[in-house]
Image (cartoon, rainbow, N blue to C red):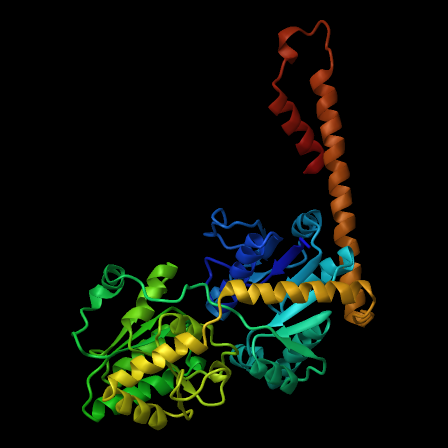
Length: 458
């Protein structure tokens, strides 16, 4: 059965993070599998969506990048709603519980189709970092949970993500639907590795550690830096590269300098070319990712595709499908534990290679397989929705979104009638005969249509 799926998210290329990458790959593989995808995302000035195999609808946004790292979308946009209605989606799939979910709920009230919400991120941590007031934090979290609970079905990208969601007050059921990797299994050619990483001139035979992702403290970066200080103090040589950007990057660089690590630890700008990202994974010997924030650790699976093993915090979501010493290396969430593991592995390079092969064998999941699993679940959700087995949406905020859908629909109907009236007037003027007035009344069609539209639409 061929479906049309509306994909909604608050971030999208050229803004890059794990969720944006997930939405792009949902669109790519749904299209490749014979379905139709259409994405709705906030406007970004430098965006170029022409290379994607599916249409992208951009709605207005505010520049809040310095505050939260992203542009904030303004979801109640009549034009975007009309374009999405015209696409006639069978199902809406929201990947962010903020403006994307608000737009999705408005559309659902208008289109009467099911809505799936995927919980990718521990938003309670984002809220705590962005808002200082405890009262406002609690209010924002209640709004978030209510927005998620309004979906017809909730997915999480890991079991740990579901536990985090329930800890924050969600009382419904959720289904684990993990993200995939858009890399093929295997390594890239040596010339690409040298071209991508060559400017750093790493000494031959010296192990290289890697981090790739957003430069935020809650990714466990302080643990990594403090551990590297201890490794150096124990007399071991290495090189460490952080690849990525983020609003805390400058602070992280300054902290690195304060530890006296600037000759061993290097920083690279975000890399958007996926083959060059693969090249970085292939150049490194060990991926350091002591994050307890991430719900899925997509970068761990990307590294695994290239046979690069990761150092992970035991019990974290990123370590969920791993086995210590088989497909990853586990540590406790502190610098001493990481330093101990790194010092041991620096003396056992063959162990790193063996576990890298284990990661490739046990952790890799392609986007083709991940989206295929989602497609099968889409059909089940549609079946449940049509059979009346989905929740009834009659909460006060559901009434608000239903009312907003009606307001936007009325706005679009009035705009359409004004355009139709302008077209009729333009046609009348264009076809009218002004006998006796000569050439002085001859105007071209473009001028007539512009005049009519200005009069009726402005």
